[in-house]
Structures are given as structure tokens and as C-alpha cells.
Image (tube, rainbow, N blue to C red; front, side, top):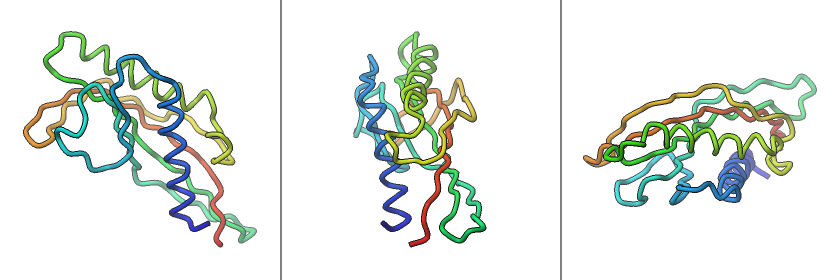
Length: 145
């Protein structure tokens, strides 16, 4: 399996665990860095990879990849409860990942939360959106073959 296929498999498992958690109030899960306005209606979860460090394994069998990714809970800014709703959704989504830290055995090391952003605003094609985010990392050995 190629390296990028291994990474895609891990990211798909992350999305699947969140979907399987059936978090109340979430209209969908987007697994991608690019997101266009109108493709999802808030509240939704947006998962994307961040720059991730790689460590060499001295035995030559592979590399330790520390996949860093962000789970953004995106809500509509017009509702009064958006701040707490976004925080709750981001934390629930990250808890769904922590519940099976091996990601159904797709990652052979560990998964943990590393940062929490309780409040952000972003604009997607002139739509102002509000949310909260949890950054996580999954450590896995990816073989060089």
C-alpha cells in the first residue's frame, strides 16, 4: 500500500468514527481542506490534515508519521447558542476519535488531542461562519514499501 493510501485510510476511519457516533445536531462531515459555500448547511464537522512531522525508524522498515489534523465544528453565526454549540460539537467529535484510539486498527500507535480553539470565524464565499476546533494527532508507522 502506498504512503498516501495509508494516510487516506486513516483519515477515512477518523471521519467514519465521527459519523458512527451520530452526534446530535451535526448535519454532515466533510473530509477535505477545500470547502465551498453551499455544500453543507451548519452545523457540520470539517476535518482536514495539518502539516505533520515524520520521524525515521532506524531499522529501515518505515517511518513514524505523526498525522496532525483539525476537526472544526462549523455553525451559523446568527444563532445565540453557536459558541457553546460549536465547542460541544468539536469536543464530542474528538471524543469519538479518542473512544477508539487505534482508529479500528488503521493506526498502530496512538491518538490524542493536542489543541483546542474555542472560537473562530471564517468566511467561505462571503458566508460568515462561526465555530470551534480541536486539533489532534495520530501516530502511526507507515512502511516504506
